[in-house]
Length: 98
Image 1 (cartoon, rainbow, N blue to C red):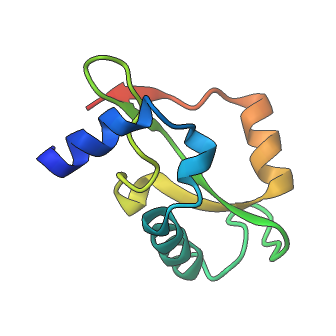
Image 2: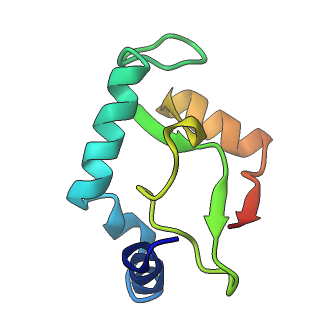
Image 3: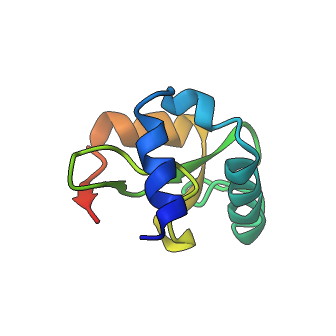
């Protein structure tokens, strides 16, 4: 992990995860995933109310979540709000220390 990433992870402790979703780095990452997935939900094919979902969460050795853009694209997927909510209701997102 780079020093910049370590600092970003540390900063997460002082801000809310929701606030980080407005960061330009997340917006760029999100746009790339939406484009990769053809601007449609990979589960149902909907093009309405799309979100980018983390298939797993990463934490540092102290249990702090990594910032949302600090993930390989393979850990992110486009879902509509309905499938996203349904998925979270059915499954727990796995958490890995990295």
